Image 1 (cartoon, rainbow, N blue to C red):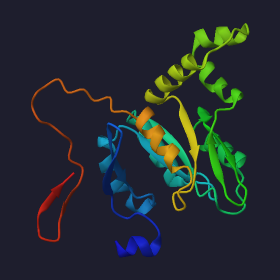
Image 2 (image 1 turned 90 degrees about the vertical axis):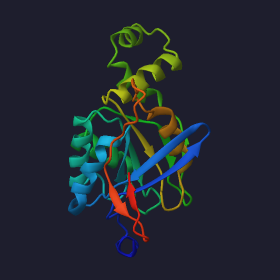
Image 3 (image 1 turned 90 degrees about the horizontal axis):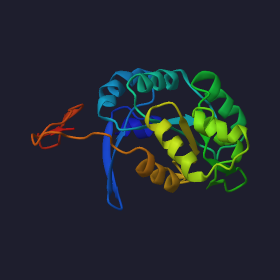
Amino acid sequence: MFLERQRGITIQTAITSFQRENVKVNIVDTPGHMDFLADVYRSLSVLDGAILLISAKDGVQSQTRILFHALRKMNIPIIFFINKIDQNGINLPDVYQDIKDKLSDDIIIKQTVNLNLKPYVIDYTEPEQWETVIVGNDYLLEKYTIRKTLNIAELEKEENERIQNCSLYPVYHGSAKNNIGIKQLIEVITSKLFSPTQLNSDKLCGNVFKVEYSDDGQRLVY
């Protein structure tokens, strides 16, 4: 829409998709502005997972908090994506603390970020970040307490289970405008936000959350 390009925000829910290897990902781009939250709520019922964008410059906004609590109430797994890391004056520790104060302490930082003239991200989980995963599992906590070696496979297994049951929120970084961190985000979407839906019937069924009309008057149902 012209108005969306002019204001630089999403006004209407838009749908697109892409294929990565043998996985088809359907993207539902919802408005982030408070004025259009009603359109967002209609879309939540069809989501297998959500990417919640947080501006590295502005931090957690009031609408971010509303959406986070709505998603959590519906048991939809959430990934935080800190966007606009290429802007000047970014302080990521402040953003992390903002997330903890206003959304949840249960986050795990999944990347190291270099904020030089050409910002970039590297997929690497600092050892201390795993403590958030460990304390939620008695078996892992016992091993950790007596200083037994924890292997990455059991840590990642616990991490993935907690992401799926909405008790842990991984944090990724990038710039959507300048294609920084987008490849890594796509990888995590296909590996961690899988569909739990299992159909037990041969009957065709689905959820409709949006109806619109094409230029030639054809009805489009999403």
